[in-house]
Image (cartoon, rainbow, N blue to C red; front, side, top):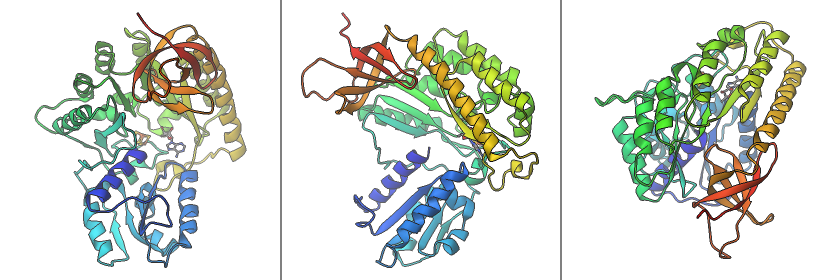
Length: 428
Ligand code: 5AD
Ligand code: SF4
């Protein structure tokens, strides 16, 4: 989401007549896009801003965008006086206007209001990848998970109209994009504000029918809003990839309640059952937080049991990080840093073993990959499967041909915990 925000901001700047340069030294305007989801990400921003400081005074103008900007607001001007612009993502529709103020010499420009109905749809988005494109369908979040800063930094939910999403997707298909990733903090609560009134299941079904689109992915889902109609839409059209990212956060109903996640372990498992009993074989991935305040050994054990039960294809795991403005920051029974670290390592080791077994089962089979690029050192191409695994492969075809962006069948010959190796095959 953050990377796609940058693509939209860069597109807006280019449309206003700015040109991109290769280095900070060569730039007259430096915008820093930031993340505050966990403490570590936030710290990086201030370290990086310190490095920029040396550049200040040489006529350069600095801006801080994104979640840290929204969260810290005007305090950033005190902490880093060389910064002239502080704006959160909900204000990006006003970015053009803010740039004009900067150009006029205003050295304290802010965009910090969350009171918006708008989304940042920009026709000028400068996309980093020529084959895969992100499309934001919903911005902000109306949930209030106790650990999460997002509702405070990205504001309330705003869905784009289905017409605008479809027009963007069709336009991308016409330009040759084949792989579309629909984005939102909680894509499942997408609700078309226009009279068509599509829900998320209807939207993915329609995007997947656009001629030229070969893959549709989406992220992120919230289990509470992940309804059976989504699985049915996926089953009905294999253009929608064989992958669902369904963040569970914890396997303990008690911890889920403390997190305000709005589902129990059983309710989550019901969704997993839908996916396991579906027509296609879906690869499941998740996010897990360890060491949430009050998480006992027994709660933690339930998370490990859930991992054994679901057998995720991969997962992201995090140590709980207290965030400003969130309700969990006031909770007692903090878990020590050492204990969080211990639990994190256990999750990661357990998952590594699961992935080794999972990936080994794919050896001998054929997977269609979208070619993402080449690893020259290894003499391999890098591909991605519909189930979102990296599959590095050799290809004996014309020398020098650029396969990037093409789709090829690849036989898996070896597997590791994090990727697969194979060779392209000719299917007759
Ligand atoms: N501490 C740790 N992990 C967090 N996440 C979000 N907020 C926090 C936090 N305060 C994780 C969740 C979420 C993912 C994007 O980041 O697992 O799904
Ligand atoms: Fe954060 Fe919860 Fe919203 Fe996800 S659903 S962005 S975790 S508040």
